[in-house]
Image 1 (tube, rainbow, N blue to C red):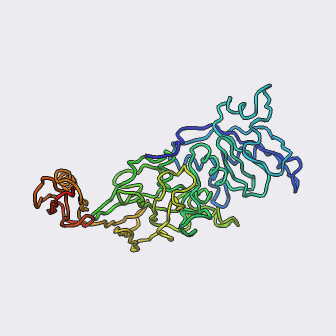
Image 2: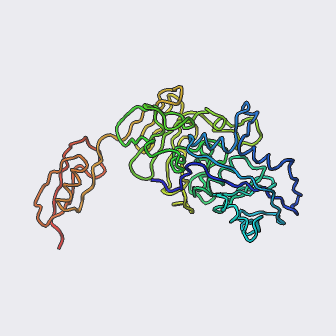
Image 3: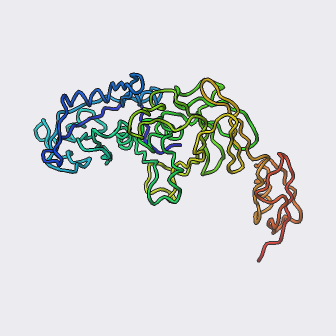
Length: 394
């Protein structure tokens, strides 16, 4: 079950160029600014990736496997007499329709989100519900991040200064919502945004098995026997295993540019990360922990492995569309602790776990005092658990 509002189908989005009449240094309106913005949204071929399209719409269609789309409405240039523009500054401004505010005018045209585009020096991305704001100098990833905030409620994944986890454990360039670098989101984020179903995750809780993972950047869901991602563990927090490769212009990025946030994913292989958020639409963060804690600082290649929380993940080979992995989990059945329970309740709990309860002592006015094996031990299926009853204290 996810928490964010899914981005399904096409959303009408207003892109609002904003000229600051008294900016310092003065704003220089680009030639044909309206078309420059329109092309950046709809068709943005870049020579750094051999002319491939890195537009906002191109990214959205690719990472969502065609589930999400956008219909841009680029408005006329709006003028403000402010140095620092905030997302909602134009909400109550008059529109071309008498008696109707600019914000309501956009909503009347079916607009579901609006982003102000200013002529600052970058670093201006922010969101406040329906309204977002970014600079022309910001990357496409920044524009996309703010729009996703506004349309889905999904919050930032990057490191906050008050986080208890180290900065280098951020999921970073492996997720658009952590780096605004126009890479693909993780399987976790795609699921939250409605671009992957829960069925895309294979659950692995115990024992050993081999799996074939398709790159997250390829069209989802994959054709069996390929898998999208593997979830390790039944309880929270849990781990996710997925394959990453430079398969398109978004994962490859543009390493020749000076902007390190445009360089794509940092390594290819299998990544493993710990999900530490129950709800990525909430701030502050639960326990001041990174929402996604990266366990593999460099993606695992064939022959490499990681062991974490009784699980061992080993990459056994490279595939033409991903990687093969072998996962070993905890062996046997986890024995439940039934200390203090009545005989009837204790027997049911043991049986529900796939084990056999052996009652030792009277079942009248008694509770379980000790048990063998103890709660938390792992035993083969069908093993006997001896429950030693003791008199209730009056």
